[in-house]
Length: 262
Image 1 (cartoon, rainbow, N blue to C red):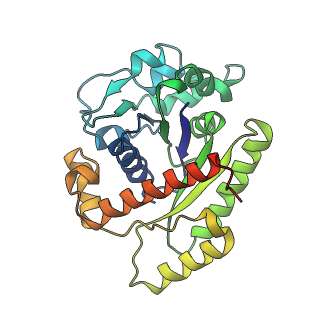
Image 2 (cartoon, rainbow, N blue to C red):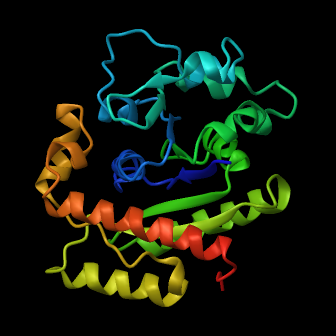
């Protein structure tokens, strides 16, 4: 039964899509069956795994408004073990189109539930906002992975996000939990970076992943080549960090299953 992990942060530019794409790729690389769902109208997760925008595909938009089934929207990515449901720019209008539908917060949960046995992991990349698309993803999710850039206002944004997660847990999805916070674009030479990292670890203890994703030129270049960094340059620091992060995530899942969660 798939674990549904939503990658979310209402702030843009924190490495959210990069994290979703590369964690999905890393999990597929260790023989997990992974579904990557692109909920962001910009569609960067879709192009980041090599999907060409000029090819017309059924997307998460068609799925949410009921124009296709999840099975019809699945696309085999060029990465073995990784299946994709792409986004389209039409998602921009989906929030307005869905506004009158009863129980609209549960649309994605109802769609994904029958397909969970097909996969080990479902990774959902969300837009950088707390709108209806992100809400739909969180209502369906088991857990939330939060990429956090080590910068001045990081903790402020994080506390807002954590309180939103608590509200969703209380009102829509009692099983929702924080999977963890992953520090992104980490520059160990910057004292601000180190200070923010220390603060976050102090606040959230073991909920912060030990692996931080470094600032790395290869990570930035990879999407323009339509590849996760793990395929673009497997030996670079960014790739190594995402593999370590996937290992940590798998170890954490194993710990929870064996009842070692604090």
